[in-house]
Picture 1 (cartoon, rainbow, N blue to C red):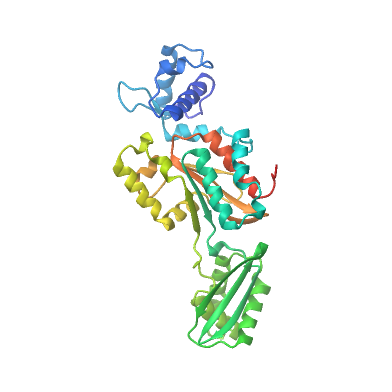
Picture 2: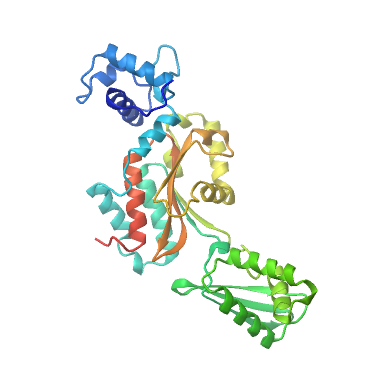
Length: 348
């Protein structure tokens, strides 16, 4: 079995099979490929090439008398040939800008909802956007207010003046002066840190100091034990396009549709899946063919996505989720363009 990637006639034949299968959803025969203008080979020559590609793991034959379909390996190769830096078509740019063009004037929640919708419209699959969980929020400033009856208001400000607040109930009353000292300690030592990393560092400091820790650390130990920096503002998900999956050949069985819909209803599982698959900082885009977890039909799904940020602050992940048979080039260009648009690098 050859280990090198397809080149020359093998590459052209493989790309033709993949594109044809994406359009039709049916096994592709050698005669169908030979009719394409760019392919100047006889059906017999193409058949031999397809047999070699099958041996190399790029194609498979679902039935003896049928044509061949791309494997996950083929789709990975195809996706690797797509350039995320290339602009989408004019029509896709206009569609994206019609939803997101004036995003600086749109509330964040509406912006993320519109982003998932336009991803769905372009891909004809599921458009998914996840807002980062609180543990990954960056600390700009934190303040505690004593409300009485052992209740404390936590006001947390992240970059770009995003404010979150929640109320804690502690076991013992903490005077306001001590609360101010605790917030001052956090603001001085942890400004610019992710909340999850702050929590880990505080736990480390308390364990290191033990019984000798000062009053500020003792108060902070009480506060974080009650959820001061907990991930109680879990990642929020925006999902559009579930109806796009109905009628696709890969989901012809009604039982599969019900199984998938149940999985999509488990929002936290879906958030975890996206966060696991799109987790490499700095990569412009990631393609995962064959998703882990349940339901089992996700193994025949693909996820194309990226982390997005606004002016350098990571705020979430955007992705398209659907059967492996999708328009990778179109989808990859759209995701790259939307990511740059959200970073305010492309306003036209």
